[in-house]
Length: 79
Image 1: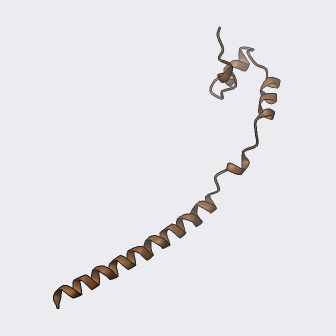
Image 2: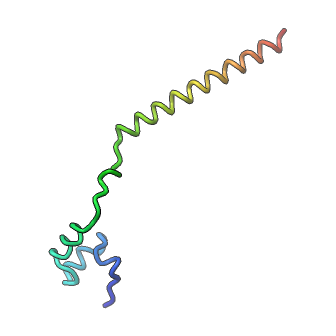
Image 3: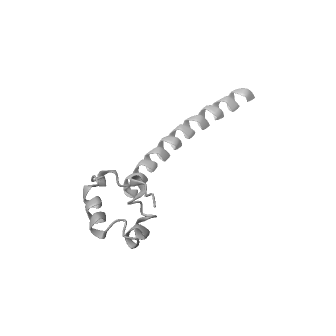
């Protein structure tokens, strides 16, 4: 049976590979210990809401400015 080395530790195949003796639990633990730490890339929902609040304020400010310009144009047409 051909086992692709890149997919040997794939979580979709992991249970089957351990059950069939292709890899051992010890091999898997060693593989996990060699993975790089990427915890700094973790999604933080609090940061995301702060960013979206700032974006929302900017949109409101732009919208208010556009509304003023439209109102001035309408008033100018009537005179």
